[in-house]
Amino acid sequence: MRNYINELSSKNKIAKGCTLVYPSPDVVEMLGMAGYDYIRLDGEHGAFSPESIDDMVRIGEGVGMYVLARVPSIEPHVINSFLDRGIKGIMGPHIENADDAKKLVDACRFYPKGQRSWGGGRGNYYHTLSILNNKFGGKSKFVNIASNSIFIEAQIETKEAITNLPDILKVPGIDAYTFGPNDLAQSVDLPGQPENKIVQSLMDKATKIIRQSGKAMSSDFMSSITLSDLIIDGSKSYLEE
Image 1 (cartoon, rainbow, N blue to C red):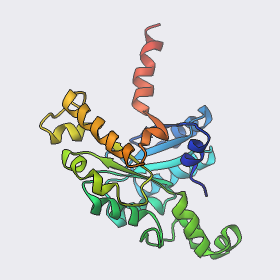
Image 2: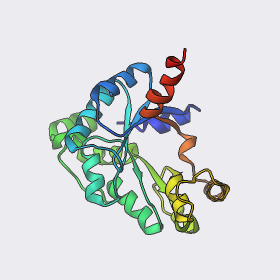
Image 3: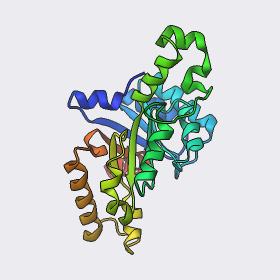
Image 4: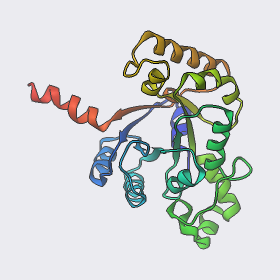
């Protein structure tokens, strides 16, 4: 188990990935064959069942990709349902304050770095002690490795969250921060206008606060494209030839 995103960053490389909103093992396999570093399953707005997440992770791992997910909420049982499937990176949406940030970290990392609950899914090798012993030297060593391998992103999506950033940033265990531009625009009475200069100014302000605190933005580690961008925008040039 490894934190592939941090590994690439240590080599001054940006991980290239694709965000999916629906399950498709064939698409995941082709993305891996094309050389993508990771896929992100959008569990907040996408259509994923626990069974389909299992399949996405299996295929992703099989073609050498790191599999992350944006979860629908930061409730521990919700995050556990993704981690138990084998997801290696969690984006927590709607982080409004320090309590939310701690809740996110606690759900993702085992004690003493968090309070993640132990499960028997494929993410924990189906609780097969012989594998945990032979591969990791025991369950106690595995939980430490698992805690360190998870990549955690906190999504800042409202004006209130930006106001609370100094307290949010004091919570240890978050690897990177990102925005939700559309929801942020809505929070300042500018629905559908993420490009508005007021929204952009808020994100610039927040980025400055984050960097001055010694923390990182998700863009420092990764670059993501959506499958719809690849298909629709990528098709335009081909169809117009």
